[in-house]
Image (cartoon, rainbow, N blue to C red; front, side):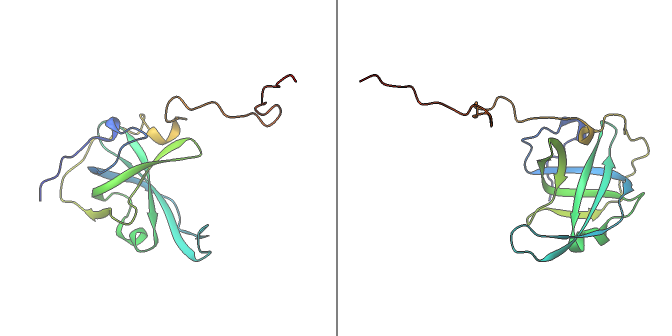
Length: 141
C-alpha cells in the first residue's frame, strides 16, 4: 500500500488523512485522564515527532502509548490535526495507525515546532462579547 507522505512543515490546522514518517524526539510520561464523554479513564502521552521540515506533538491514547519510544522512527497513516488550546497537535483517532519504520531519519528540525505556535482556523464569525452581547434593534411604536 503506497500512500502520499507529507512533511510536518506542510501541515495546517485543517490537515486530514495525514500520512508521514518522523522520528520520536521525546515522549512525555504517561498520565491517566478521564474522558469528558463517558468518564472512563484513559492512558495519555504526548510525543514530539520531527522530520527535516519541522516538529509537532503527537497525542497517544491507551494502547498506542506503548507503540512509541524515544529515538524510534515511526510511520503514521490517516492522522489528523486538531487544535488544542490554539496549538496544533497530530492525532491518530479511531482510524489512524502508527508503527515503527525502518526508514533512516538522521537530521530532524525541532526549531520549526508547529505545536509551539498559536494558530486559528482563519476568520471566524463575530460572536457576542460577554459584556455587551448582541442587541436587538429597537422598533419605535
